[in-house]
View 1 (cartoon, rainbow, N blue to C red):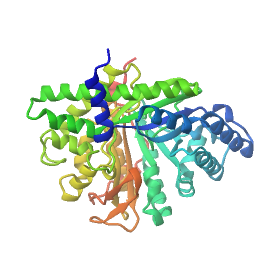
View 2 (cartoon, rainbow, N blue to C red; view 1 turned 180 degrees about the vertical axis):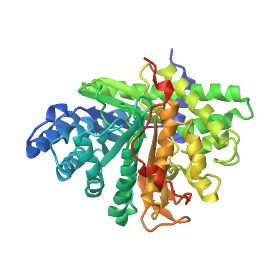
View 3 (tube, rainbow, N blue to C red; view 1 turned 135 degrees about the horizontal axis):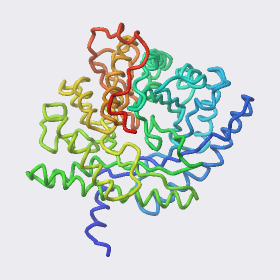
View 4 (tube, rainbow, N blue to C red; view 1 turned 90 degrees about the vertical axis):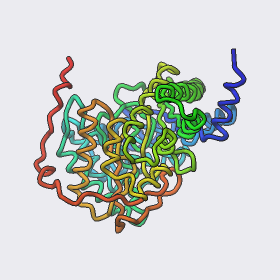
Length: 452
């Protein structure tokens, strides 16, 4: 029996507490687009994406109107493009990026992900080609997002790839310097990348996924923060239970939208990703959740413990609500996209080192972190390596989306607009890891990876 209180509570979540469907993402396999002819390849990629996703935007808009639930982004994720690049030059890979961008514009979607490579154990020719092409590809496109998985718990850490990504990020920052180095905001370096993640910039259509699939990402930091404030001075046990119940309700909304979208499009329903993904909007902040739990400001002592409890409770509530929870599912802490995180970084309460500690217990990693534009590429690689090591040792997904903002220094801000928000330039330690990074090779997989 439907409880009128539950209906009213859900309506209040949507209209007053920023509950939304952050993204409906269609995954599309490009395996059947393989061709030895470059022009034939890009033509097949364009046709496959257009045919598969032609009804994605109108379907999402119809569901939005039917239920009154905001759907903020409509996106597409494709098979890692490096798998198509074995016979291409970097300029040929860029042609694929331009083709994906053109398809995204014609479909009316917000982003298209999957300009990606998986190199945790080594490089294929296609992966080398794609990685070399990333700076140009992200400069000449608007909607293409790129990711590189450089490590896994099973394979260890590919330090050659991490060293290269430091250079790639610096070059991307320079080539997009007239737009606040925004190209780096569309590039993420992963450990243990999930194959069903609907969130950008890391979304790609994994090799074990069906031909097409619908994955949905739900977000409601404001809902959780409001529930905690209403609970008052309860114990942490009660608080954890409250967060679980709130996450359950949020996930049910996502399940409804995902199921209907999949049915209407005639494709399988993949997963609901319950990630508390913030926005620059006031109230829609993971930092505010932590502060509602009793922290004076995000970043102060106790922040990592509070975030660990939040992340665990969110996952438990989501799993109760749906048997198809996947992706990342937890709490995101992107600095530029979270008003509370921005304030904490500007006040000095939140440092790069504190953020790194927090990523050990949350869903992703060092996300949308702007750093001085003159930060050496080896230092960027060292920051990435530290973050990736957390994921490998703890058998979880971690990632780094770092933006060395060209000509910017600590104390400056860079504006990206929209959901990407505003990033304060954060200080980076100056002692160099260059000699360590340049050793190259692999950091072996941890002993607990041997589970067979």
